Image (cartoon, rainbow, N blue to C red; front, side, top):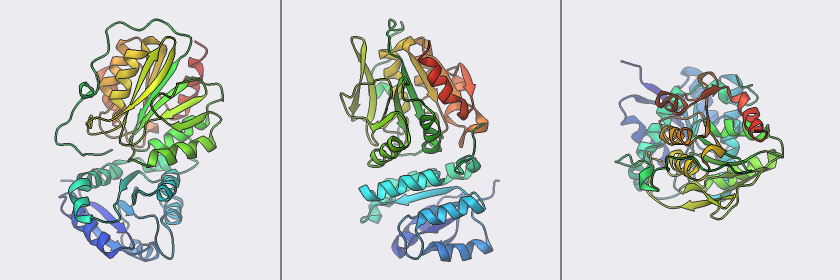
Amino acid sequence: MKPAIKTLVVDDSAVVRQVLSGLLGEAPDIEVIAACADPLLARERMRMQWPDVIVLDVEMPRMDGITFLRQIMAQRPTPVVICSTLTEQGAKTTIEAMAAGAVAIVTKPKIGLKQFLLDAGDELIAAVRAAARANVRRLVPGTPAPAAAGAPTKLNADAILPPAASQAMVQTTERIVAIGTSTGGTQALEQVLTALPRVSPGLVIVQHMPEKFTAAFAARLDGLCEISVKEAASGDRVVPGRALIAPGGRHLLLRRSGAQYHVDVVDGPLVNRHRPSVDVLFRSVAKAAGANALGIIMTGMGDDGAAGLLEMRQAGAATLGQDEASCVVYGMPKEALKKGAVARQVALGQIAAEITALRLR
């Protein structure tokens, strides 16, 4: 029997500490070793016993969560799950925390903690388990390169759109790159997108992320990249030099109008327990772009995207999977490889070059 995941909760609210500790403590494979009111108290506790995973708030007295996170990652890289409220300002701060090395985000309400237990309990437990398995050293900023439950029934992409046609689409002048990722993906996407030149194929991206965080995530990347990055909206055209990121809580689909590509942002049930779902995006790309596309599945827990990437490959698209050595969690790429959806595995540091080369084909 594996030892329990030693977890430390750091939050300035006594109620939140009590609720989160009780929730995590109910999981048979998780042990809450302490719940501290701020990072300074947490630091003292960690001198006695270092946790396997830290569940961390962002806005706290004496020291904010981002400063504490950066200190941890510099001293002894440790998986951190950010548990933060969903305000616009908080979203921007939390995205900074993800960039600093946090593994995942779990949304925390300002009120209604009892309902939080019902709605997000499984999500938090899944995030802690995923964090415990993460290759956290891949999250340390500057390291060179070599998900969530929520539905009792695991629906597939049939719930959103029918399967792709068997024949590939005719050739078009524009190329499409579709990327799907989850745990560890915020940092991985930053590394890929910041390495792209201004003239790059148009990109459509699903990153598993809660509602309201994706706009801040896209805005941050837009400020770092030569290409334009924005949260997708229905009707946006996919053009060279632009990346469109699926909004949290909505599915992203590609459609073709003549020789041009556009996106639709739609509601719908969770697919593979996710919304947005990588499978939904990949299936739509298989239908709309066929052999004119490149599909890339990157770091993440679970199997979302594996079936859709196989549909893309069967429609004539090129397909890549991030290799195990450069993944934070080698889950999604592994499942896609097992299905025969991945034509080649490449290291994270090679992905930008593969995207750039697509423009020349």
